[in-house]
Length: 252
Image (tube, rainbow, N blue to C red; front, side, top):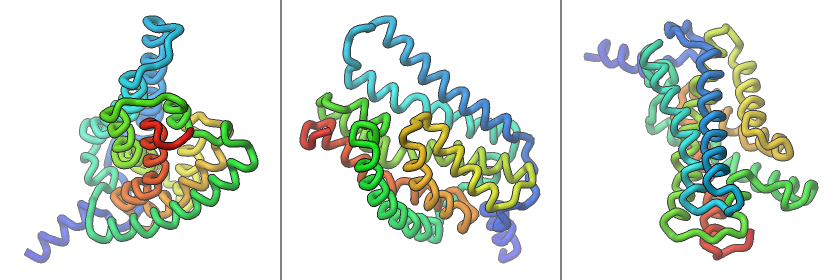
């Protein structure tokens, strides 16, 4: 029974983060998933532009445009691990154990403090309008009904981080490990790609600060669950701000 338990634990966690990879997907899988994300966002934008070229996006459109691209991209990433690997549990090092939650909360709180300070400094340097996130810009001066506002809050806080971690510190991380990159090189490269791929040039440096503690949670735990928790903790205050702005309870 003990030996069997050890085998399960090894398959679940794979303690060595640079252990030999047995899956058949690599960096091309990440590029394909990122293309799915970008093309879905472009397609939704194009459809809105065709049917309502001069109208301000409705709350429903904002919610769909925010949620669908990352959800679809993450679903494709999970499917790739099933079709060309061993599934997300092994290939992406996906677990949610007590130590993952503890590690995630620790790095998430560190990230929350660093991000809050960095956002304050960055806003004073570039101005409040330029420091605003893409999602913040969507709800800027646009009061939403309660249901879409809560949906945005839940997505930014809990669901969005899961999608992004699957893509960046799951799929991309595993692809770079498969290329025999060292663990610190994988950490830094995924951190930089995470920041740059948000396609918000004025916020790239701020996104780097946000990404570092999340990546460290993945690096030191060797598992995806810790970085998911860290990302969710880090996103709580921004998600709350989006909710309050969307409800008109706080100025943009």
